[in-house]
Image 1 (cartoon, rainbow, N blue to C red):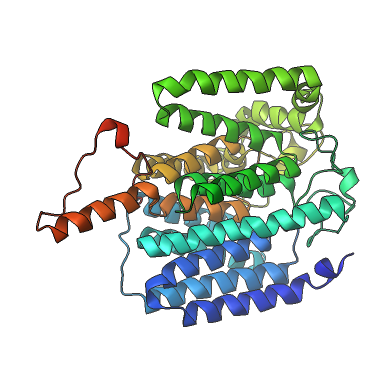
Image 2 (cartoon, one colour):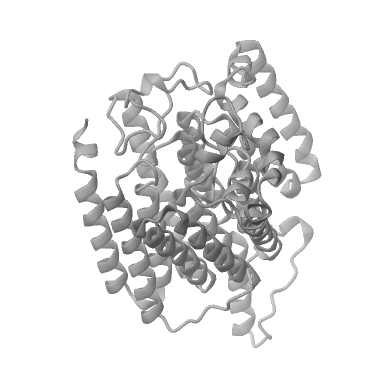
Length: 448
């Protein structure tokens, strides 16, 4: 056990207290961005299933307290749109489903967590441009901290802050990295598992490209650091989804003359990967237990309709997954885990919870800006690989980014044009620049 892991619980208490103090003392103009950044940081640093309940409780209470303080200090009010209503309804269903355990602690945690996620959505929804930039930079800083921890795991063999989920050993060599077999293994940072860690780095890449305003050199460095983090996590599913999202993003924004260059570069990379043997090692997944588990769960999901009608409609309860595996309603590769958010939600909360979750993702995608849309798209695909909503470390990333005003380079250019027009006495309506000089950036509208 490392010094870091031994002091993780006291460190959580200290960080929770500091986050509340920080939100209380920062200027009002940045209090909302600071509160969202603090909430995301706490829930990422203290993951579920791995950290002890006392640490999870402290982090959740600290995040919620910071958001409440921000709401009291700020004069800006958020509009409650359909996506937030759907998120609230899904949260209510999840809280009711958690009552099946008979544990007051689990019920209280579910209530606090869903209240935190809804407040994150409301706070992010009402953030001004300066708030958004504070949050985006804090998120990149958080990813930087996780990158340091990931590198330390690889080079110094430092044990992670929390025990790995589903593993009885902290030895990184037991977690084989098939993305980069030459590495010591798969890093997990403070998130307890490689998949959430890779997801954090992937969202950092999207924020660097679409959210934060920075110099081109700094942007390139942030993207490179995020991609490096994904490789250190060894998550093939995250890497594949991120590459597809980035290709779609660049294909949409690139000039027609640049498309052949991008395709040629991609073909060269694929040729090198195939001939170096890396591609075979990274894509040989059909024999892996993780692949067989996910395929087995997905193919057996239809058997959940054979449950009693009430359970089909409202679920079997939040703690029913192990029992559903034992009864044969779910099957995999010998593991009693779903690794599929849609099947997991259907099993625990029935068609009602599943419908609310899908409706939330769809409406959020439709009403979000560029950053929100690519985030929802990426998380929606990753939902077939692991439980991105059940795990609060990734759920808070999705909610915060989906509802944040995507004010990047384009919004900054619009503000400059409006100020220049106002100085000349012209109505502040941004002029349409020529096609060659158009800076295509993210839409500045938040989720309505």
